[in-house]
Image (cartoon, rainbow, N blue to C red; front, side, top):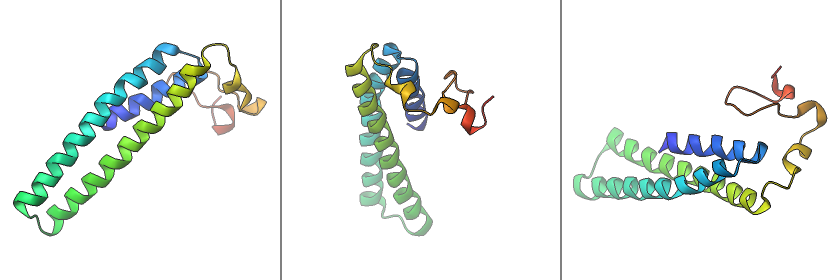
Length: 121
């Protein structure tokens, strides 16, 4: 689930900066899978709590897994909403580049590039 959310974030950023509608569609498609995994993890955790009554470190592990699960799903939802807004705007808007100061314009989003103001070349 973490890697799906990470990929969704990367595609969302690429969709915004490069106006890549295919990346936006990939984010929207991944959201259904992220939601399904969240429900599956929740069901497994509740089953463990109900049937096995874990104690101490096992209980803490299950509770941590539930919290992480919820946070990852929220991050996925955030990317989905951002991608939906970008999908509505289409390829005609150039607002993404206007949000940054001129000295901080992103050069490219290929996973390694950073805006100049954040230490990128």
